[in-house]
Length: 205
Image 1 (cartoon, helix red, strand yellow):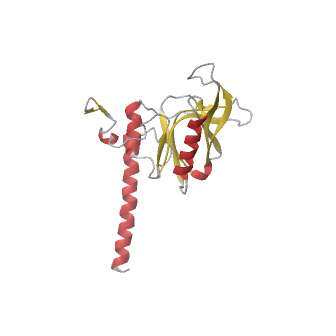
Image 2 (cartoon, rainbow, N blue to C red):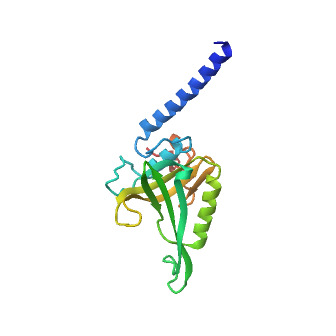
Image 3 (tube, helix red, strand yellow):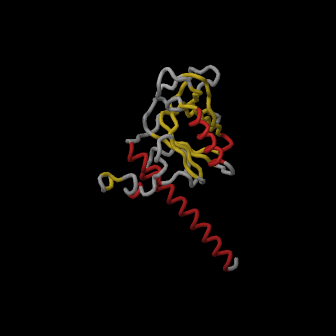
């Protein structure tokens, strides 16, 4: 084995070790809200941000939870779209009629369906913007990660059968992030108690 080969082996070993240390750091500091590998998409700042917003405990699929949990899936195993209808907007005047919509994201993992539904109905422009961003951020990507709350089993839909039901909060790829609530993709600095994870100029906790 020549010197160059030894250097390459040491370099690859160092990279693998660094990734293992990073994963271990995630697991020890934020043990609950990452249910799959992060695939270098979900960051420590993302996990810290959710823990800053809510107290997050172990995930239990037998109960409906309000905590936030991240999961990452192959892009080919996830579909995003919406249902549309004509009717009033519950957030607007009752005598006005709009084209309304409700988003749905479906993911399959280990032969199990997981459905991420919307918090409320929207006027059609919101859903069109979402699907455009979904296409843009997932194009040429292998992994998409979803952050959602709930995750209880639901078996009252005869068409879909038994599945896990979530409420989506945001999705993210290596190209970027899109969130239901404005500004919630901006998590930079949270793992250090900085940026959005500060209270009155001081880090929370």
